Amino acid sequence: MDPGKPSCNEAPHILEIKMLASKPPQDSPHHPYPAPRRTANRTAGSVRLLQLSDPHLFAQPAGQLLGITTRFSFEAVLEWALAGPDKPDALVLTGDLVHDDSPDGYRYLRRILDQTGLPYDCLAGNHDRRDLMDACLGSTSVEPVVSRRLGAWHLIFLDSANPGHNSGYLSPEQLHQLGERLAADPAPTLIFLHHHPVPVGSAWMDTMGVVNGADLLGLVAIHPQIKGMVFGHVHQAFASMRAGCRFLGAPSTCVQFLPGSKDFALDERPPGYRELLLEPDGRLETRVIRLDQYPESPLQRSGGY
View (cartoon, rainbow, N blue to C red):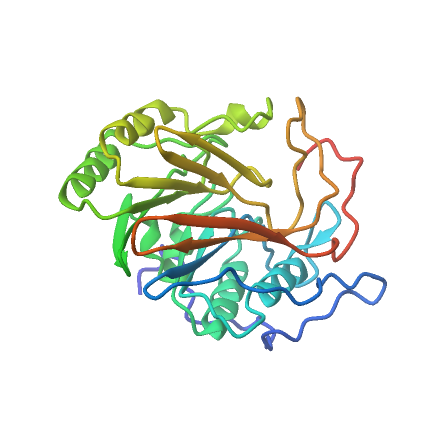
């Protein structure tokens, strides 16, 4: 073993985790689960994806971000997302997976995801360590561009993380590879990345998008098979349309940022996830689903994190 390379083969401090059996802290009065809901109607050949984003996990089970125990909040959202008979075909986690640069945080995440029995892809965010993702998750999404076919759709995963910066960046090599893959496959395409390539209307957050997002939008103009770009980072639901392409942001599984805010501000809306239904004829249906309430009350009087 290379002594300089992170190892995730041993996890002496990991607690045994029983999937779907988490409970809130003893001092939490909240029961976050909504009433049972129907999954969106599916047609033969459709693909159902769930996007979970920005869990900001910690090595310690009690680790908190702005008053939220992020492991519990993540498990609450995941449990609700997997409730019901219609299981998703895959999970996509769009970055900011672990907040404290800890191997144990990534080990925990892998264990939870493996217990779902579903295929999953994990993208790096500005709070993530690529080396730990690679070692602990075996994540192919630390590659600059990853693509695969799922049903009739072409899924592309981009690494927009720019080490040392909160904003994102796509290298010329990434954009070239992306262009080649789009030119080679005309199937309806969904692109995933961590950072937002278009403004979302929150002034402080829009300083931290993909700094060369215009280059990415240029590809949308010449490749009409791109049906959507799906991102995290913004901790809020977002949807817009440009040149026939939908730009979709998701809530975090922990704290939410207030949409339309000039400066950092938290939203009272609870955590959630985005459901994506990919139809074989190229139609994309999507919705955001949230818990009824926060598992715990976030620290509203915070200037940031």
